[in-house]
Length: 585
Ligand SMILES: Nc1ncnc2c1ncn2[C@@H]1O[C@H](COP(=O)(O)OP(=O)(O)O)[C@@H](O)[C@H]1O
Ligand SMILES: [Mg+2]
View 1 (tube, rainbow, N blue to C red):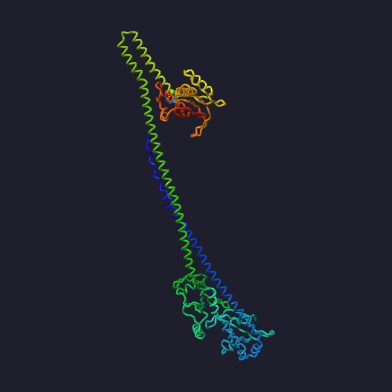
View 2: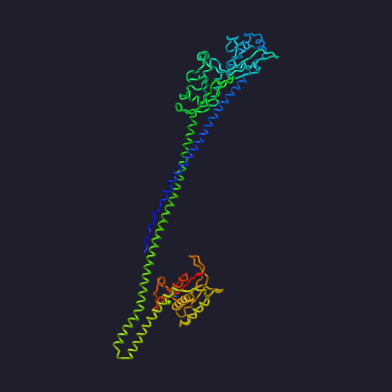
């Protein structure tokens, strides 16, 4: 007997999947956050770089614009006849009269800080901004350039006292004659204020100390009441700044980093500051110093942080949503899995129980069979013993003894007949199949049946139109069909209706095999469901003279042909026994 084999415990689906899923999601989220961080950083850096580039552009534009403005001023002066006359006559007083008012208004409204009349030999004639200094030779680059090219020249120039001035020098020519030069200039501080206002950034003008001396620088600060810082950095002096206090972290090392083309991010008093720098080149193409751009990125930074936090929060939310959905789905899968597992377990148990029951049934069938055989043999043997005793006692009466001996013989013959039937039953297992025309086989069997059956029960045969030839053992099939016919006749009372034998196409649905169904239908008493459960058990019979071997033989024959027997029956309405045989055996 087999026992239920132990089934593996159902695996914990959720635990197996949720862990790796969570790790995968966390990884995806991490990659996502890193990607977003990268993108945001790039956007921010590009924004800052664009601002720095905008400063450079704006600075150049402002210089250009102011240059044009100053050029227009000089042109207006050159067509002033009175001014020309005064210049020609080197009349300083007349020049002061003619241009004094103009210079004051240029200074007040357009921040013009310098205006000169210069003789052709490059000696100053009159300085509106400093009238007491004159007759000095001027060697500035812009003037040299204007003299050499005899065209207007302009550019930034660093004064010895640390002033950074945008200067424009134009030769004054009249009818091919060079009258001299006009020079006009403005200090760049006011440009810085305009840039600061329009771009919202702070600027710092640094000048290399090589181009300055501390004495002159100090004089400049005192004379022009400028602000400036000589000592803040080692190599550079702070010429101008738009912010009150410079960030503490802005030191020489950081400046060098900016000068090398890099940018920097520093925090100062709770603010984030982005730094970049642009070189300041003077009219003589010298690298005077640097314009440091400082941008307060605190708002941008906090926006960046917020957007990172929201990205992380949203990803977390989405990930937990996905995890939740998966958890629920896996929960369902796990439940189904467990149910299926339980079912399998139950099936296995049922199967093993079924096999046990079959075993028991076999044993009990064997018991019944042995009981049946004993019973069948016992009655005539008891009769033989009793009759022999009687014959012994009545041995004096020869007629009586003969009669008793006859009965003894008859009982012995019964035993012999029974043993013969048993032998016949056991022989069935060896069969020889051959192609057998079924119509003939059925006809022969019906004939045999008519001879054996004393009552006349009508038999109808329904065959298919084409001849059917099946490879079967004709002796066994005839025997089985004969048994079914006899049973059908025995179940049918007189006048209850006829028996129908039919042969038709049919398939074994379970095995999906084509074949034929040979059926015997009667309209007799039928069977109860309880009786139907036992009819194939050897020796089960409801008839006093029955053997209970007819149907077991039928079933055995069907099984030998790889077929099967089915039965449908209804009490008082009739029974249909069908032997299904496959096409080829
Ligand atoms: N066509 C049928 N209609 C009703 N009962 C039947 C039919 N065929 C068989 N049976 C029942 O099945 C029992 C067993 O049949 P069987 O094995 O042929 O043995 P026996 O004919 O010797 O009784 C019968 O005693 C009868 O009760
Ligand atoms: Mg029978």
